[in-house]
Structure formats: structure tokens, C-alpha cells
Length: 578
Image (cartoon, rainbow, N blue to C red; front, top):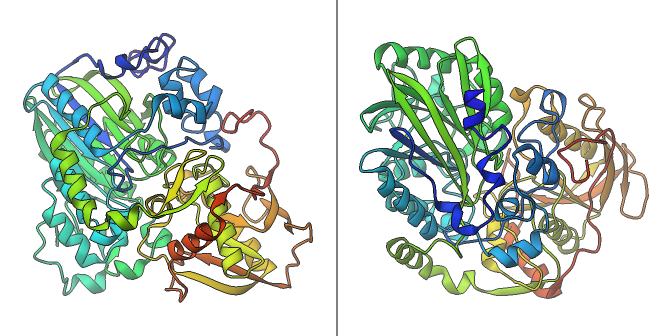
């Protein structure tokens, strides 16, 4: 009860009483160690708009528990005052109106001001800033600089420790170079080197390489914070070579590796004598919750990947006691702040707040703003090109489709003269408000990856169904260790029925074209898409294709949103109105 109360999981949470924006950044000092955590910023250096999902379904054991709560269900669970600044930060409710009222979120200059303020209030040497990854990808400047703009920004911000996921979508030599320029520690206990490469490893001189363990990077680091020994173990995204192209990182292996995690935790506890042991994870929250139940000896998991802005930690019991599990949202929108009382070699108590970063409330740090202006200057004209005007909110986040996803799917179909289009269920991508000009900057936020090539080819109806079944199993498999943390593949020109609670191969049915024509399993259809993982496609980069579509249309309003009819989700608190 003590842990749950401190986490804000009991009635009377601080979030229920904070109505004034000025209260956001009054965070009383507590204990002797402050751990700050950001994750999944996706290279967003400037403030942005970001709409939280109205669909984040939980199935099986995840039904009705964080992070699978949206809207009113989320506010009720965490005692958040409706129509407050916190309600806007954590939910999609009244998004358009609240976004106009409270303004943009995130931005490294505003985040830097908050970090500096907290560090000053906690005192010299009493805080640690951790980055959960997905930092070097997600914007035009990150793509053009191969992530170097974000390495510089994180150095200026003062990030002490990080792990990764989309960082691994650059070439392996670029990753090693970027880590070498990063001032902090890059940790990942679950990234190994395959046997063939280990005999003559091309990065053997890299300081993180551990030949004895066969690991590509340091598995953990020890930091002295306020006189407390803090061990930080890294957990990179376990499915990187499946979700992203392995051809960029041919020598490295991944995986959840919870047995290795237990061995490393035990080794640290025995040989390093830490007072506090935390895991900096990019598993996704459901995977972190399961890992916390299986691996003992971890005090806190600071999680990322699934972009879940969860106001309070979950408390997970295991054979060694309890582990706190957090997840800190995305796009630079939040900074997690955990103040801990660590005495006698163990965690005694803590206070946690997931703090929204509002650019209208927090002043921009001058040094960081100057850096941002500098790194964006060579690309300014290109990024500011005006492509079209949004007549409705264009967003991505949600299990099945978003309006900006539909724009991409419609562009693929029209420009490539296809019957059906497929677009990945990425969780990154910023929001455009009604009446706002869609710039190339906005478009790059939605599409900017290192394998952006488009394709146009025939697929049988059975192939299309197999794709939908495979991705839905990644999303709704009842065992979190079989989930990859993305959302459902987006479709254009195609409708279908989805039953998330069904088993593999039985979730997708009643597939039809937009005009109602049933999909024939043996018939071929022309399909357009992008972001192929296995091999490089030959088509133009997706942003070139969508830019042509936007320039031609000028005013963008969605004629039809291809979202499936859902079965078996009545009463599910992970869907609007559930």
C-alpha cells in the first residue's frame, strides 16, 4: 500500500488537485536521489502537437490495466481532473480545443529548462538523466545528419545513460560513430554479436565491446548519485532485426534475454553492491510488466517503445519482492521524475511524476535553442515548404488507423494507381491541427526512416489477409513476449472485421474493397506500400510521393477512414466509449 500510494495509484493523487498550469513544475524535493527519464522523442527538437490515442486495446491479462486505458477510463484510474491541463496531456479528450488553449508540447529547449531547474533544485550531483532510445530518428534533420543532430542535442541536455531501438536503423558503423560522440553511457545487455562475426569483429576496438560475454555494448553502468551507488542496466528493443532491416546491422543479435538479465542483475548485486538497481528499457510496457514478474532484484524499470504516457508506475510482485514499472510517453512531451529515498543499501520510498512539457509555460533554454537553430539552418527552406492545409486534425497514434496515416494510404493508392495500400503501424509522428499548414517538416515527421522506398506489386487476397493476421498477432497476442509493440498495419481501399480476442489466424474476416466487393483469397490485387524490411524496394521515397499528393490536393480532408469493424471489445476501457 505504501508503494502504491506513493505511485499515485490510490485516491487523492496529486494529479486530481492540480488544475493550474503553474502547478505543473512545482515538484517538491524528496529523498536523496532524483532519476529523470525521457524516451521515444523521435528527434523532435522543436515543440509539436501530439494527440494521445483513443484506441489502445488490452486483451487477456492486459485488459483493463495500464497502459491499455484511454480517455475517461484513464482519467478515472489515475484520479485526473477532467478538463484540466493534465487531462489534455494524458488523453485525447477535447484535443482540438485543448491544444489551442495549452499550445504545443515538447521541444528540447523547453525540456532543457525543466531539466536544469530540477537539477538545481535537487543539488549538484544528486540527479541522473536517462534516455530510453528512439532518439536519433523521426525528423528530416535526423535523417540528413544520420542522427548526429540528436547526439549533439543530448550532449547539451546532459543525458547520462541511454539505450536504443531506431538508433539501430542507421548503418552499424554510423551507430558506433554516434555512440562514440555521445558523452554518456550507451547500455544494452541484450545486444550480442553472432558467432561468425565474433571471430573477427570489425568493431573490436570499440570500448563497449565485451568479447568474454559476446556483447556489442556495455550491459550496464554504475553511477554515484548523491552518495548512492546506482546501477543502470540497458535493455534495447528486442525485436529490432524483425521489425527493422537486419541488413543495416548484420553482426548483431537481439532478443528479450530475460535469463541473461537475471544473471547480470545477480552479478551486479554480488560484485558491485549497488544501493539501487534500475533497468532502462525499450521493451514496451507489457513486456516490461512480464519481465518484472520473472526477473528479481530490479528496483525500477524505466520503460519506453510503446509511447504510453502512464501517470504512475505499476507495482509488480516477483520472487525477490517488488519492481516498479514506468513508461514515459513520446515525442519529448513528457519528462519522468522519480525522487527516491535510498538508505541502508535499498529503496525505502519514492515519489513519481510524469511531467508534461508545455512550451507556452516553460521558457526556452537559450543555449539549446541556439543549437537547434544552428543544426536546422541548412535545411530550413526545405523543411518550411508549404504543401497543403489540413481541414481536420491529422494524427497517427492509435491501434488501427489515424487520419495522417489515411493521407499516406490515399496518396499511395492514387499516385501508384493501386486498389489497396498498406502503411506500417508506426507509433511516432506528430499531429497537425485543423487550419494548420502541412509543411515538409510535418511530412518528414510522419515518414522519415532510412528505408523509405515505396513499392507497387500484385498480391493475392490470401497474402493480404496473412499480413493483417501476422501484424494483429504482434499487437494482440496474449503473451507479451510475442508482441512487438507497434500498431496495426494501416490500410487504404480496404475494409475488414477484426476480433482482437481471437487466436492467431482467426482475428481478420469480411475483407472488402471500398466499394463493398469481397476480397477473393485466390484473386490478385494491385497493392502499394512502403518501408519493406526484408529487401530494398525500387520506388521513390514515401515523402516524395506524399508531397506530390499534398501539393496537388492543397486542402486535406479525409473522405473515408479505413478502420476495421471491431468485434468483442464491448466495455473495453482501451477504446473510446468502451
